[in-house]
Image 1 (cartoon, rainbow, N blue to C red):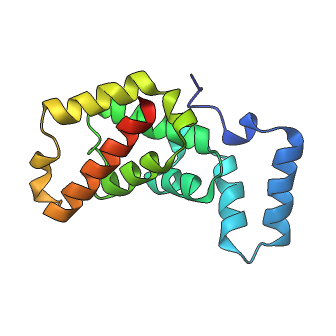
Image 2 (image 1 turned 90 degrees about the vertical axis):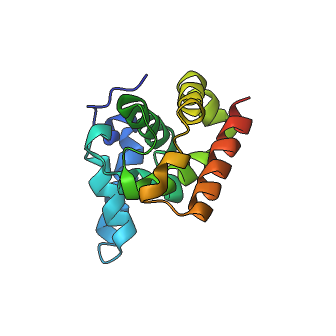
Amino acid sequence: MYDRKKKLKEFLSDDEYEVIVQNATNFSDMPLPVWHLEIAKKSLSELSNFDLIRCIRQDVFTNLATYEIIERIDENNTPFYADIDSLELMEKLSSVSEEILSTHKDKLNRMIENIKKKNLIDLADVWMFDEQKETYQGYVETIERKIH
């Protein structure tokens, strides 16, 4: 769907990119505009999980970040590939609009089926407490509701 090697700024118009550059220049003492410019120079595959989470949190490149999170989950055949970030990745994914999630319905259905079939949440005992498992299950159910 998206070229994961393409720099994020290539998904923007020249005017949109110029606004990001100006904000970073005018507010260079503030971390958010500087971060926004830094990630615009990266490709999807170069973004860290934290960058992806922050994109959704800050509502920048939301479509692209959602796509990349789903691709990483799909490639690794588990939503728990990111260890510590897994809970927050799923939280942010569940917070994305129904419209955006629906464009990835097939992969999300496959991910949810994989979680259920392999009982992956119960197997996360090593690094997830019971209440975190319940929270995670809630995120999965939210995603499932949004795509059906």
